[in-house]
Length: 221
Image (tube, rainbow, N blue to C red):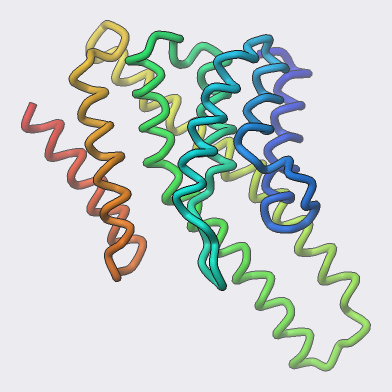
């Protein structure tokens, strides 16, 4: 990855998060769009668009109604396409499945940052009303835009780095490109995650349950 490409990804991750949190609303945050930009940047457009379509389908399963915050499919399209485009995962079906499923698992904590960012924006508004600062509106908007942008730059890229480390460790442990049974384990976790999300419990408990199931499956094998 060149310095120009790295700078482009930093800018893209920030703008995609900003667009997702209603800072722009130009559809840049759609997984198909953000994955396409990543693919074009790294001259790997075809496979990245395919990944973007996968995360578009996942996003269709969750419609944000009212105050519900859907899982961050923008991050999914960005991180998975970036990992494939930069060679962290190869183009064979097993490696792609492994990469996509690992990214889906990481979407849970990333979505928490989405909720915290929205909560911070609400806190700013409440403070403005409490202090009767009607002239504070433009500054509030600026703060919200900056926080949304920085969230994408920091959280998206840090989470993608965690996934990269995970893929690297698995590849080193098995000295091969992700054996099929590993992908089947991750696929089962992925499907289980969509069942667990319907539980009426705290999100952190759901993430812990998924992680515990993954560790148990690893030890069992």
